Image 1 (cartoon, helix red, strand yellow):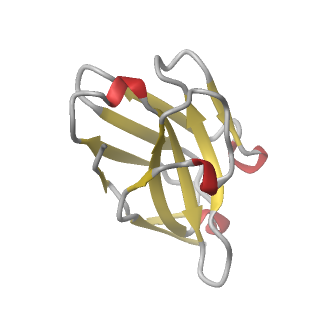
Image 2 (cartoon, helix red, strand yellow):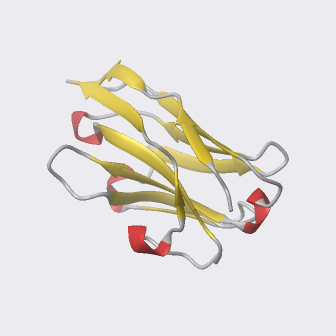
Length: 124
């Protein structure tokens, strides 16, 4: 089992950058594939970015490609999401999530563990 805690959310202006972090507990972090999801008010939770066990494979939803970068540091049990050129439509609660299998998955139902979420608000 792994416990996840996000940090780094906040209020920024359009065009600004922000970095989210996710701290994972436990010694088996490197055995989990990780993902970032987000949920805007009145909308379903959507996939943002994913990364495999080692960090060698990353994948993104089309709307964030070229602006967001997912990364992980297995020695520190941390996951990050670097966001640049933020837009108003990026406003949402962002969640990190973990799953045992390293296969690329973009559905929230494929993830087993979730953090509590971090609010990101982008003003236009």
